[in-house]
Amino acid sequence: MPRPSKHHRPARPLSASFGRVDVKRDGEWVLRTISGSQATKEYRCPGCGITISPGVPHVVTWPRVPAIGTTATVDERRHWHTACWGRRP
Ligand SMILES: [Zn+2]
Image (tube, rainbow, N blue to C red; front, top):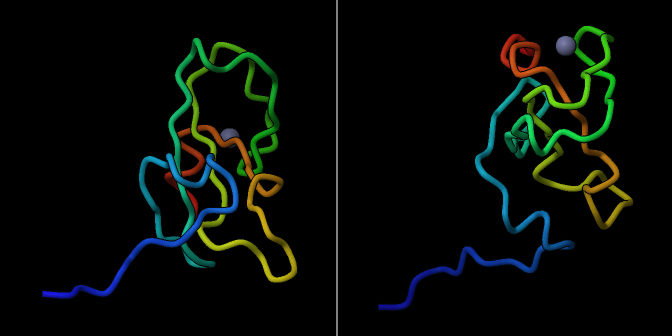
């Protein structure tokens, strides 16, 4: 029995290996958990504006669908404190 294909070609391999999708007020966001050992750089959390220090487990998110006019969502990745992301509407 033929089934509609859910496959589409991702713009970057990053998009193909996401963990899960979170639905927020402004759309669907791919969410990946970063462990402490994976966190090697400083990031500024958009939720609270406080720096996420290296070694701190957190989440990285990007839009599931690229913004209009772009082909990749890689540049739209944002690093959030896990708790701040959870509070995001
Ligand atoms: Zn935060």
